[in-house]
Length: 289
Image 1 (cartoon, one colour):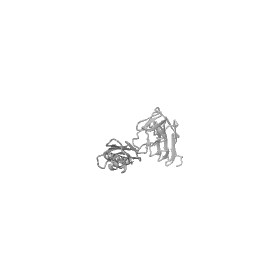
Image 2 (image 1 turned 60 degrees about the vertical axis):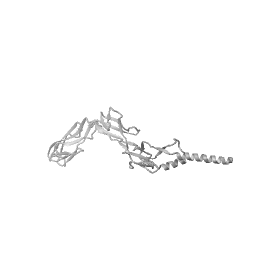
Image 3 (image 1 turned 90 degrees about the vertical axis):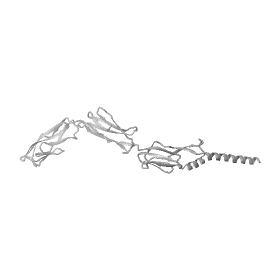
Image 4 (image 1 turned 45 degrees about the vertical axis):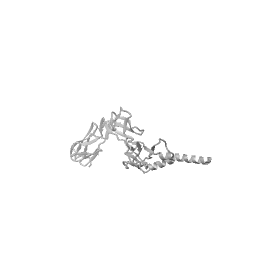
């Protein structure tokens, strides 16, 4: 045999040895590399890690054939939350939890992993300003997470001046004295926050009416006005009322209307203060109806 023939025979023998080694190799296991959480709207291809019978990764061409022969398929437990196509591409649809299962064609390899689809908060909405009063020193403060279906979005409230007001875990503000303080709403575990300037108005300490005595005819009208001390006292909870509406009535703006002859009192109540005007309704009054 010539030297050339010997080298050719040796090459054929080596090729046969490599071929036989490849033929004896197989995939013995497969593991999905998946994150525990995905953001809604996120897409992600499943990455699979394989184990081999001889412990070594085969060359690309041989590996492709082995993977094709394995015939992996993918399913999810809830396609409303998480979908997967035949190539293992995941799409996070909406918030929730779903299991992703990978199975080989012969059923010898099977693995399932749980994925939690989350919706991260992107913002928080609060009013720029908020006004309350020592007349009603407790009020609810509302902050809204954006988007509204964000998951695991717990809000923590803090007061910039606890001498003026405090804020409970549920956002309830308790006013301690009149003044101003900034309330900050923060989503736990994030830097997402919003601030609101809260003004606490003082209670009225004194009310003075424009008149303390009035005389008018039936069907005639006249308006009472008032001043309050201190000037910045809260007047939003004022109440006008008549001691006898069959004689004279009064509306929320202090407009008095005579009904029939008689005497009654028209009063303004605000916080724990009251002011009264004595009203006489007389058909003989000089006031024109």
